[in-house]
Length: 199
Image 1 (tube, rainbow, N blue to C red):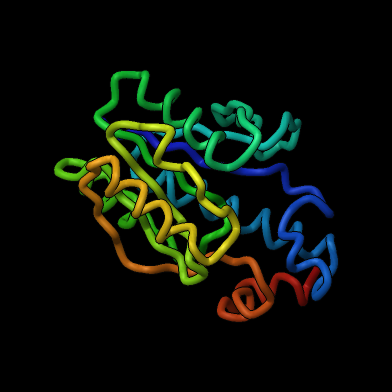
Image 2 (cartoon, helix red, strand yellow; image 1 turned 180 degrees about the vertical axis):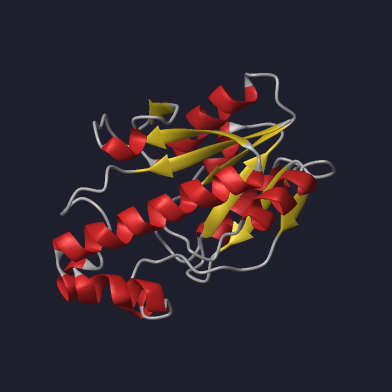
């Protein structure tokens, strides 16, 4: 069995999609993030994988009320993912996946393909156009996987793959997708343009 963790933030204006705020404002940026998070939950449910949310902070948002969730632990993204992987892999699963909540290109089939890739790879990644990745999965976790990675840079994928090779992980790279971080990203999705036009 493969388990899945979703990294998410409470969709509060001013604290999510901050790179969009100068262009569309904090309230619309939060609406975009909420839309993406709801989409991510829907796709995850369609995939049939067991999942839990890992929130950046405690939240009483109604979106999380009926979802199994924990609070992320760690001082940077690598540490938070390492701790989440330890949790997910400790439940006797054959592997674990972690995704973010700001990619409308991810489908249930992507999640299923990633889970299938872990049958004969120790690491699977869904690359993103910005040089990072929208999904990471593994069958074993080593803190060195996230060592010296410059988070939020264009080198995140390259540095993670280099770490994985050094740790003798067999790596599977899936197709490249787009995260939604900038106005240029947002403009690729008519549904998001309609959302901000109406809010």
